Length: 457
Image 1 (cartoon, rainbow, N blue to C red):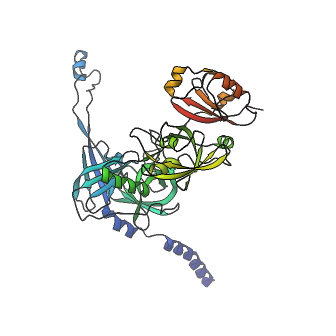
Image 2: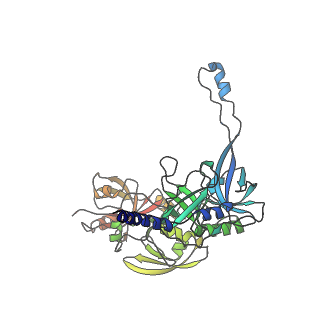
Image 3: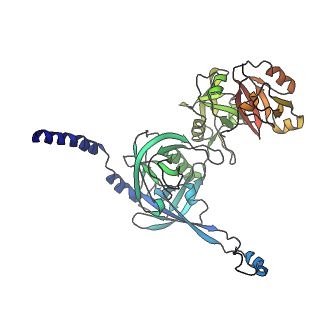
């Protein structure tokens, strides 16, 4: 009996031992790579406001005199992380770590501290390249682009909440996450991980088990201000290109097509002749843009670009933004239910232009349930659309209302036909089949939008 209990005890211990033996040992990785990670402290000048005094503290007769007094300029302090990418002192971090800073200092693991100069910044990718006056520095090795898979172990090293050289581990949860900025720009296919990232980790490296940097920690999703297991890093494929351009030119030029995009939902997929929701729907093509010169038209759905599949609208800006202006690539698209390939010459993005806008609007155009009037010639010319009909009213509960159309929208297409006046609109309206979603294209606040509308049987 005692022998059986001993064997049972051994059997219970073996799986646990084997499982422990299969776990990676992070200690050597962290020890070897920490010297290349730096802490970044910044000072920003903040303009003073007017003095505000509680009521009752001074007589009313003197309050105006005190409140008009301008408070002096003050310093605001913040911190972040970064890492050394060359032995002669180039340091990579996030743009938001150094944005607006009047002073930047970089501190190494051995407590050496240097003043840093900004070589260049790229707000669209949230990256900044710094330079310190030093040589013979430890360097973090960058991984090969695209050499990362969901489920791999990753390690973050940084200074969360100012706690120097803290390490946290986790796995890659997803790849290619689209996180549009406040301007609607979407050029970074973020790496999502469950590594604990907190304020102060920004700009620090994300390592794979080979000790190579696969990403630059940039954002977290949080309800509390701290980590809840959703962190996002800029992939090394983006960083490599940005660093090269910042070193050479001090700024970043991105590829540009000159289009506005929409997501393809189930109804749009059916109307566009697609087997399933996929691709990036072209809602608008900017005049004289690379897209227009390549023959791309509104209503086209790009499903492959430069040899890579485009599954969602967010995938396309990721690919276009990585290309150099002047590059020539092929785009596979669906038009009128048929597949075709066009050659595209990539342009350079204007400084103030966002290539892609993730639209939020209601679905499309209507049959009955709305009243329209002709667009006057002056407005049509100013908008550059050559005609259309303006919606005056939308009846509650009508197909137009359910589709999300509203007064002020300018309808320019119904089904596959163009609408330039009320007469054409009424003709097309009468031909809309019941129980079948049809396309409608309209202009709202300067932007073209595609949606579908379905007239009940």
